[in-house]
Image (cartoon, rainbow, N blue to C red; front, side, top):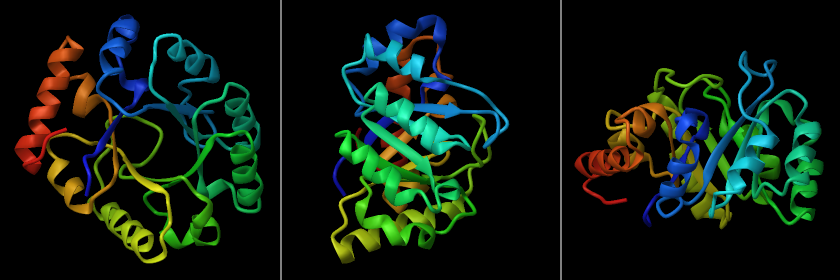
Length: 228
């Protein structure tokens, strides 16, 4: 597998150091992960389209919106309006809408992804998997930072890699949840393309983002024998 991409979850960043942290990370990461929660799909409310626009003022890398929301069409359009580069919808709530929403995102020149909760099998998305640019596997229950890592979800990453190899699909595979020194080895064995890192893996390690990044990078190397 080629070198992995890191995508920091910005709901976990230190907002009082917003510009400093984004400016440093711009040269290190492949994208920023933006959690959009509506208080209904999950019992929490976090970031917003406004936040994406604020990040864009200092960001030099694409942003990926993770829509943990019930009304997917409304929020997809919100993300299209601000040209968020990746728009990732939950498979659990787009049945009957999936083809239309994926086409809508692609017609806007943006990339479409789906997210699978820990209990949701890969076969849920097989009817439209060939249209996807990204598939995200939740390795924790969604909605809050710091949830317990669910090792069994890694089997879906392996399954997605096998499907991609067999059928020539073009999606990238992303994992979301509790990516840190404790789990890097297990995650690496499953083989996702993108690691979302949050509080435990990056933002809570030290007060300074540069030091935290260096610790995370060393942790990854220690546990996998590879470099970021």
